[in-house]
Amino acid sequence: MLLEVANLDVRYGRNHAVKGLNLSVAADELVTVLGSNGAGKTSLLRAIQGLTPCASGTIRFAGEDITRLSPPERLRRNLVLVPEGRQIVIGLTVHENLQMGAYCRADAAVQQDVDAIYDRFPNLAARRKMPASVLSGGEQQMLAIGRALLARPKLMMLDEPSLGLSPLLVERLFELIAGLRNEGLAILLVEQNTHMALEVASRGLVMELGGVVLEGAADLLRDDERLAAAYLGGH
Ligand SMILES: Nc1ncnc2c1ncn2[C@@H]1O[C@H](COP(=O)(O)OP(=O)(O)O)[C@@H](O)[C@H]1O
Ligand SMILES: [Mg+2]
Image (tube, rainbow, N blue to C red; front, side, top):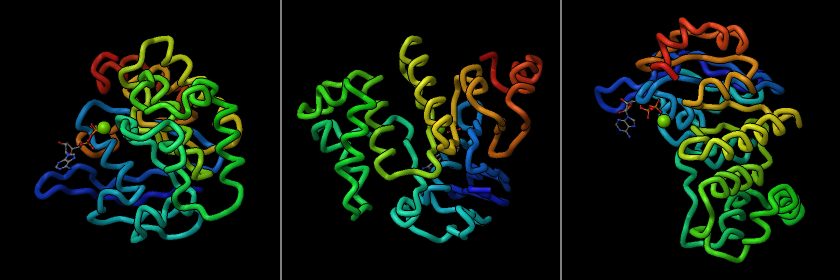
């Protein structure tokens, strides 16, 4: 397994946000984590990236125990989070935002990778010198994903990337995610768009109150409307 999370706990004071969670992602796999607001999904992803401390448990990545490593150390091991809300710096240009994704890299191939991202996202290339504030929500999400790709991820974690996008842009976003999966990138996808997420994932987990209440093959979860209705609030 590329990522192995065992007995992970995240606490904010007395609020126990993630409770004894177990999760694994193989090198070529797209796993989705579903669940309603407050279930602990963001806390889980932030703990895996090292942005939120874990109270107990272990996180192994590419055969190494990374539980105590800093976020940049995890980034250098090619573990990358596309955060909730995209977190684009609107005072910087599109190009400057993109380059932030390479801040942990010192190799000579950064420029080549930047060019490849502009090839993939022509809308970003056309606006590279403009402030990121001119981008639409969909373009900002592309920028956030492009920035993450610059860290040359082995595993990309995405926290609710479809939030706030129009149905057409959601379609395009999921095409992009499926494309990245087909290129061999491992993906851990947190989504509220249950239906679309289970279309691109091979496996899914449903979180509630910090724990996993349901998990299985994506096609089985997708067909299980009774469980979807019970755990996903009618999505
Ligand atoms: N920085 C924080 N400080 C205190 N409590 C938090 C913090 N972040 C999240 N929480 C709480 O932890 C729980 C899980 O939140 P979160 O991980 O954001 O869930 P989700 O992403 O599934 O909506 C919620 O009860 C939330 O209020
Ligand atoms: Mg969240």
